[in-house]
Image 1 (tube, rainbow, N blue to C red):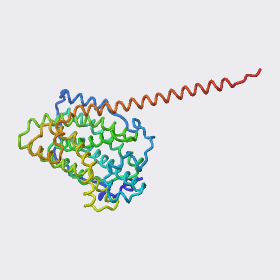
Image 2 (cartoon, rainbow, N blue to C red):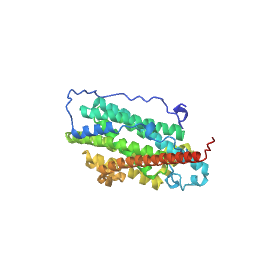
Image 3 (cartoon, rainbow, N blue to C red):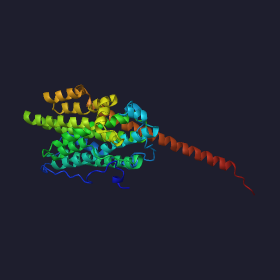
Image 4 (cartoon, rainbow, N blue to C red):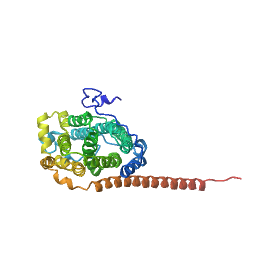
Length: 376
């Protein structure tokens, strides 16, 4: 089935074309490069995996409750609209919200794949090109996985959110080689990591938990890559150049914050846009969700050296300034551990089932042998 048949509202154009800008850069220096970055490149090679086999796609998913979303997490909860909804209506709402969330993840991963390929093209250093090549493959795998989940398990997709598309366009149109790092690795990937983590840690559904845990294991490397490359480069920039990038971060963070409301979902349920915005803004869950989503962005921005007065004021306005003290390395380490633990649990469960089958086969064989009568 064509994806366009599954969209709640078909995209206005099946292909979005963003004019390319900036130079393709080649490096004739094939020395060993930076040790930290080459270690990350090695890890990127070692950690490649196949989404078709590592994830258990046989797990069933209820399309009307794909994530086990509690009522309180839905923007309509407690409103006059909620009081009129049947259980079927509420199931439809959960399906739409899950579709909307994972559709934005999907579109973001395609954007990340394009940005990673752009970094391979434009970054001047070979060690960064090598790592970006592994990330391009990672992002392709993520897009494949989210697409499969939406097609096979949810059966519904949403078009790309306007704010996400705007930030992607700004990132790709900029001719400066560091902007795909800043727009994608720090802002879009950082926010996505936090969103993935919140769902991973709250869902009781095994398939989306697997998907998010394994993808987050990759994304932790990607954010680390952006931090390394930008921290080194931004030490060389003038105050004026740093301010330009801080302005980009401020605008991008407001776009990302406003992207998260899911207004499109409520509009599909017949709620006027203005009222949908008001309902979303009144949601206590959304306020908490928004704040936690910046737990990955703010400390990363601070770490790479973008921490001017205007940027700090913007984070105070958003209510996320205190996130600057979050321990990114600890968060990334936890992402790795959760994925590895999930692998271990699945391996042990499969091994237990295999041994049980062997024991049963032996028991069946013994029963058959005891029942055999030999005649002269």
